[in-house]
Length: 366
Image 1 (cartoon, one colour):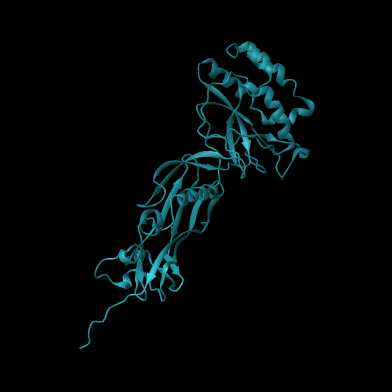
Image 2: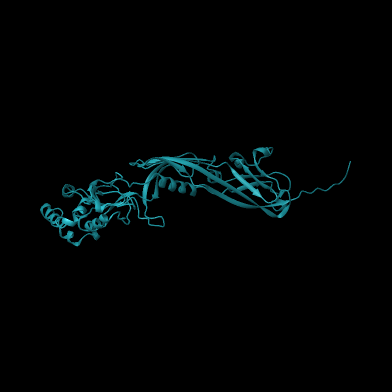
């Protein structure tokens, strides 16, 4: 998976290498490359699209299978843009081994004395010659440049090769490791390094988008009184959109992993039920089963979610219903085992319920 975005320079050496890269990165004509990930700059910084495999239970708000998640990367490879390379390289025929070799030597000789440490970031001569041989054999070779998040050394993280140790005056954040900043690949490079917490947060956001506020039905509804209910009798309320509002059973269990990486996690969330409240009726919390129970003749009030209005209001009392989800997660990534709490989510709705008093005409007394 790739990100087409800005490279963040970690050290002063990185800034020098970025300049060197403009001269040396695309010593071969770059083959056409397709990116599974897309540039997605935003308020949270640069992101990559990773393909995650998700499994869940019936009614869970994220369907199983492969989905694309946009997460901030730690380390990644992005294709070198041939149009941005030093103009001289286009005069070289990469299929001519001798001309190619002379062009490379002529440029690499320039980076001596003061700039010798910067060469540690570049592929070795053997790397370049191997890429040249593959190109001459007809393989679609593509050069990629290393991307690193601020404060990260991808060689120290085990993502990129170590090109050597830098002098002490090039050290920053306690690291003198020079990561190899360019690779030649036939096909796709390895997936980006991402952190499991970011994957979990993004997946939970996806799940939350599949949840919704409860849509309430009720009984009684007296047609002759404008669909009103009655004072001082239990009015039943139940959720009609049970999959969206309750994930069917009030529980969510999701498992996710990113193939080819150590990133995997399980997410477990649940709701204790639905809270309903109204002026003149108070508030109560109904269990998931009570919130799912629709009125039927002969049904028990104790099995249902009910409110009793103490005062009439033909213009309607507002009835508010809300469902709150809480949960936790456990997972692993390149940093080992981790876990935490899922962000609490609450979805609510309000319906207006007219309330009237029942009346009777007395025609006689025995």
